[in-house]
Image 1 (cartoon, rainbow, N blue to C red):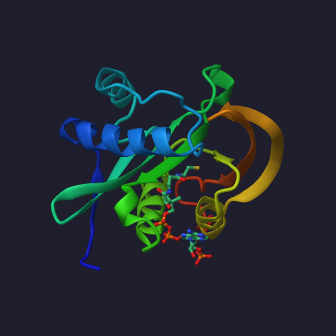
Image 2 (image 1 turned 60 degrees about the vertical axis):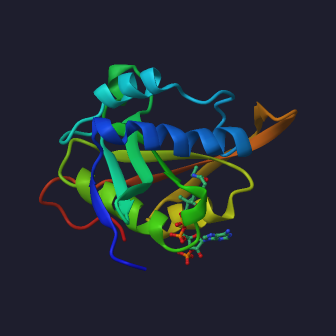
Length: 176
Ligand SMILES: CC(C)(COP(=O)(O)OP(=O)(O)OC[C@H]1O[C@@H](n2cnc3c(N)ncnc32)[C@H](O)[C@@H]1OP(=O)(O)O)[C@@H](O)C(=O)NCCC(=O)NCCS
């Protein structure tokens, strides 16, 4: 695989990001959005992410095209949850299973080192072996499994929650 480029997301990436996400909204229950996010909604979302701080968007570019993205976003709006982020990662379906998710997610957590983030949480609709393996590889552990809390495509889905610590600035490394 040629060396991928990892960088913060930009406004001109939003169409690709929206298209990648729309594929998984349509084809899977791995996101429990039922309708694709519109470009305008994605633009609003992007405004809440920055080149510094706890809410980041990182893209992986391959052959000049965005092949995937990872983000850290608000977990819950109440201010006492500020130091906790919810993370997510989505690849172009043609790019899965070749290590790109790992590279991308690592870059996200590298970007968060030293930011005011204490915990990262991730919600994974089951079954999703690749996502569970990716999160375990990046140092997440299982918190719990909510039975049938999601409904999509005419059935209910279990959702696994996982968490990992984020090291304080200048502290010891916190994970792989
Ligand atoms: C989940 C996703 C980001 C993982 O990225 P990826 O590039 O496909 O995964 P990688 O090649 O980096 O592999 C990561 C781990 O998953 C495992 N894996 C990859 N594809 C797998 C599959 N189809 N079945 C089982 N395990 C798989 C790898 O062996 C690796 O495990 P290891 O670290 O124990 O060796 C990607 O597959 C994806 O975008 N999936 C659809 C969207 C999605 O599910 N997003 C996450 C929502 S919670």
